[in-house]
Image 1 (tube, one colour):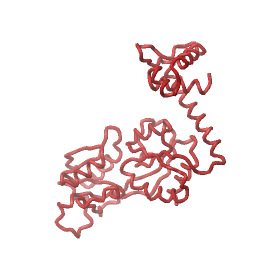
Image 2 (cartoon, rainbow, N blue to C red):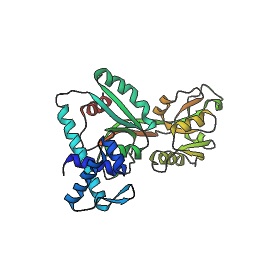
Image 3 (cartoon, rainbow, N blue to C red):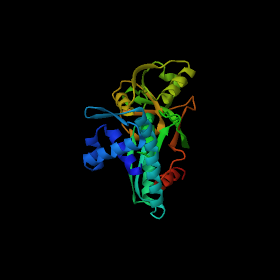
Image 4 (spheres, rainbow, N blue to C red):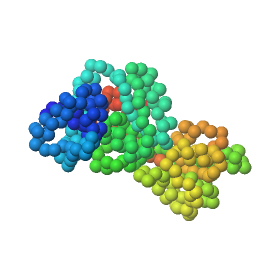
Length: 296
């Protein structure tokens, strides 16, 4: 069995059907069916259960899929590394970012593009679980995220470059303000205000940090809405529905006149930020230089 056959097998496993896998591979169906039959004969196992036109992985097939993904990724990374020896910094750099860190990217991308104009970007946005999955699949090379990085694959070894911490600020509707000269407030002033909480079923670390800080100042916030979207919470604040507490850098992505940002003076409440990538996995020249750009 060779790499080519493993790629055939992975395509079939992904599509669950010979016809769709053949289309994905840009080949005819009969040769692909023969390749699958040869693999099963060589291994002396059944890789798929046939259910009409659908193919479902057997236990043996699931094992081979997991191992094959690793082998094919390693092969592709080796080929990429060899090609990059004399190619310089070029190609497509796929990266990920949580929404609350998006504002950190533009200045770094601008500086990076000034030095390496041959590189283009593909940017994924999502929560830690989605971006962790994309890292594992090698769809992206690195992620800019809030820390700790809460992915589904806790066993994966991550490398993390910490970035400067980001202070939390209070975010309020502008129309609530009775003093336009006011630029700061105390945490306890949020006690009786309707609160909008950023929380998903899977990523809770930042939400818990905000709750702990509220409790440390003697109150439980009056949460009227939990939401997984930063943009939706900002829209609710702008509409005068409630207030929230976000890392300061988030506000750069939402420069709305209907929203006010106030510093919180009675706490050193900080959000940790970092760049995350898979340890012991190949990083392209572009990815390595992009990480270095954050350190300049």
